[in-house]
Image (cartoon, rainbow, N blue to C red):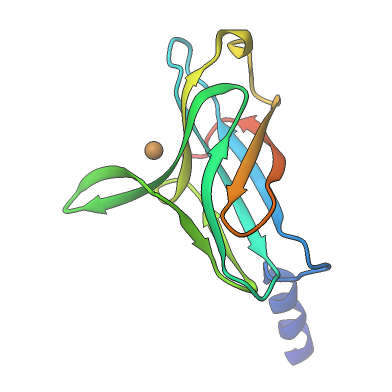
Length: 144
Ligand SMILES: [Cu+2]
């Protein structure tokens, strides 16, 4: 029983690093509503290095502007706030998820307005102390 429990904990642990590369997982973009050009993107970023990473910008060719945002509920009022940077702890991870940190996507470009569920949108993350990382995020309906 104890062995099974340990195995389950290992399987459930998101911090299993195979190599020394920063990894992006479970990246997705909230399905665009017709007529609305803004959306948000979510992912988990793993930092297996010994250094704290400073994420300070994000870009996508599909959108005019991408911002790092936080989301908080203060006295029942939902607020989003632009962040200047997000720190990814050494040998740790940060989850960008609904009602929390996210990439705010402004101004879907006309060229890409047919984007639909299942399509992939390219992103680039820009760090102060590391090379850029590119990844694709899949367009999904949110699980509300
Ligand atoms: Cu936002």
